[in-house]
Length: 423
Picture (cartoon, rainbow, N blue to C red):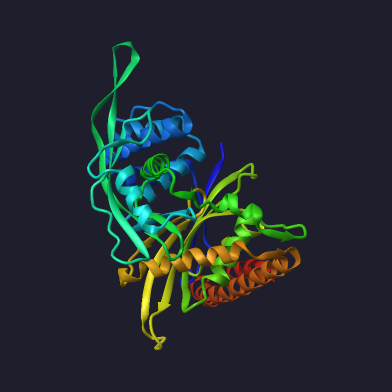
């Protein structure tokens, strides 16, 4: 079985770079904690996810059923996947799934509005696909207050599947019901589907793709793991290519145009080539200065998601602006999630900056020797800070040893052992 590792970094702790090795049961307990509220809804979501993505039919009536299944049958990939499913779907915040679109040359924004009104009639249920019981329905007018965007609300309804005699499936009672906004941003030619659940996003996207015919040259989810194949890399690269682009994105491109990242607080890695560690999460403050982060980069792990705090200046006075916590998911369709934003009126500005900065990073040429030097510098800074922290620890510990250990021989042995490790 693969080993699952979780790393926490806290620069305020004297135990700098502390590493907690996490076993499978610990991961399962984290999932169980996420299911304590809205239990039935979450268990149904997990059932559906296992059936759709792993071809596993599991009945989860109680939390104990989930715990037993995870303990008995699930591997590390499934456990990590379920945790992220629950975290993305039910975490608080304002989510944005990103779709790129391009209207045909002979069509206009007005034509798009009319296409939506005709293809997605208001208050009319449309099945997401023929083989499920998911309905999408436009529940508002298509609003185009200004010429640079249009928006409307949709309702998502998922019904239970009831097996009748002869193994025939029929639509049962409603299982999940929610509504969310769809926003077309003409300034940047992006469509934002503002839902937290991947299944809800996929259903809404399928309905729009299938019914809104004859208006788009392009209407496709934005996925970095397909687009980085067109990025230029010169020389033999030691790092994961997606990670290389994201590091440039976080360290360079995002910190432009009056935006600046004030702290990196969480990152998720994956290493499918490793025989032991497949998924690693690092949490804490100032992650780019942690040895755990540097180690994951050096091992060519792929960054799956990041969380950071970013600040935007809003006028000529740099001391005033807007601060937001943002999490970005890279593994599938690009997804931005905003939390604790000081002024939601600026969300669109933030989304445009986040997206344009990523495009800039994708369009760069990366040279192996330059990247190697940057990683060496990252490791040098981390080691220097680690050494400084170790010295501070010794400054606190050694006086305690001298005070608390009365026997001189024992005291000298302990100090000798410490000195042998610190050189």
